[in-house]
Image (cartoon, rainbow over all chains, first blue to last red; front, side, top):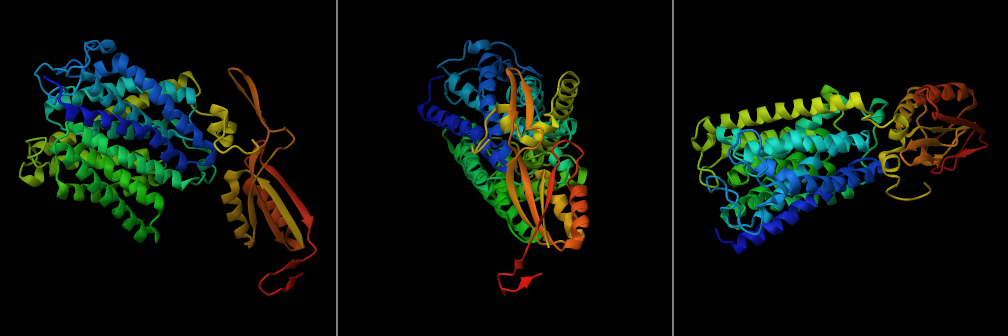
Length: 416
Length: 109
């Protein structure tokens, strides 16, 4: 297969676009926290970029994408990127990875950015109380036992792909795994002292939240558009439906909070956009604009409900990672089974296009299995870690904030 | 007339406000402050040794009340700000000679 220049250019640009999403998550989350924890999430996002990149180029890429068709995990055919080079990769049946003429290295790095952002999403749920050392150990293990297998199940032609589940850009692989794992993590960790004691810090810098959210929004065009692995009509469709879903969800969220709380908060508007983007992710190459509007609408409604769950069930998901990414991801994966047109990147038709429950049931099974798997494994890792080491900061450390106690710096200087 | 100045933990502000409201004290001024008490801040141990955070973030609450409310206000703040651990804060009571309402210029006794 010869190199296709246009496709390669688009995938390389998309790689950079997806990269920027991880520092963006740092700003998005940091602004939502109290100012004494701003640096901790920025620091964690850089640590994750470093750690996951190294995992990825050594064994991670091969375990996720190698061993095409093996049901549960890839193999070590591309250990240390051996065989992943300037030529397109080929798979056992000649499809997918290299079919659009992009170099193996471009495909590898593009997918690597997805692994990084998936891991980085988790830090928002456990923020303000988890010890940095325990967090890094947890995320290291999590990458191997949750992310890499699930990525293989879907994108390495593993058992879920063979079952028939489709996930265009990572609704299952990224948003459901990270979102649901956070739910398990916060149950093991327990509530923040500030919440248990009355009142957590209010978001200290909403402009940072909007800035981070806007960078996420920009990055998402590469995330979804680049997942076409080609500069073609499917990529254009993915970019358009991403924009439509984000726009619809932002407006929906604003409208709900206008009626529910009297005023549409800025935080809510940008959170709504992120929920819309999370929900359209699995569907971006499969649905058209009308589907995207319904998906965005659903994202606004369900994720708004999702963040109310934590009060009802009394868990402390600091920055609503489950409410936005978990719920948004699950909705998007199921919605793909409803609104898949059958004329874009998949020839299968969803429920609304006369395909019956065939695809829908595959999607529901995939969402349920991955959610249960991510929850159980994350719970087990942290439960065992908790027996072996301190996974939470001490009360005093929590009161002073993670910036000083975990990193020895403070975000805004001053006397201290 | 007395001014009650309470230096409390930031995370207890919500419950102190609510408790003061319950006994009819509505007017108050709040500021973010940093300081230390008898323990000279907090000392932490990490891999490379010890470090001290000697200026701890606190919240200062100021309320001005009639003399006869002193005990009640002090008791209420103590109760609502307390966690029982070192660092719960301090309360100071000062005399106030006059309070003037800006809108009308009238002096409160």
